[in-house]
Image (cartoon, rainbow, N blue to C red; front, side, top):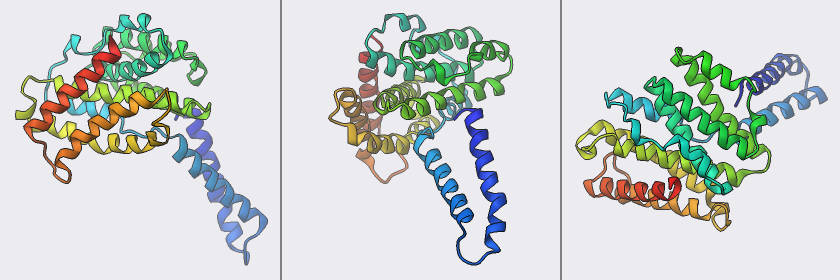
Length: 275
């Protein structure tokens, strides 16, 4: 959710909060109190309906950074490939992939890669026709804050959230799910490929498990669209990932077999997306 939207919602919430004590001094519900309650309910509904449903991508990339895993330049999708995606579905999925790659580069303060991945994201956003969801000064903001990691994280996070919110408000929910699918696949791909000894590193396992609940929730969100031509392949991909997580349901660990299967599955799904 962008800052203008956030400020608007906060202003409405504050107004409702200020008026509430006045209405409480009356017996029963006055028309004004009912109006305030309706406003509060509308705010809550809008926040729930359009809020970005996954943990911040930076939570995953920061976990990788915290285990002192080095930045691997060629692990992410080649940003120049953004020019080679022609189908709308492919553009949406790869936008999700590139947003994670952008977060990865930002987390490790890789300035040339930050610019390259932002350019790739910008290209696909323009192709998918939702540039109006973003501040026209966004490229300048990225450029001006390359030396300010905290601010850059804030800008990039808002970009993710705005994309999801805008697509849903425009009735393009299925497209938003493709973007989310790309992001969860890339998040898991980075996590399972950041080290050659994934299973022996408990911190990497922790990062993999951190993503489990959100991906399970995502499958439930996508379920009503599972037979859609647009979403069905992405839904099947998310299902296959969740099936591997469920092999050890109820535990706080993962078996070596699970890790191997998850790595192979995510690698195969991603390869089909980024080719």
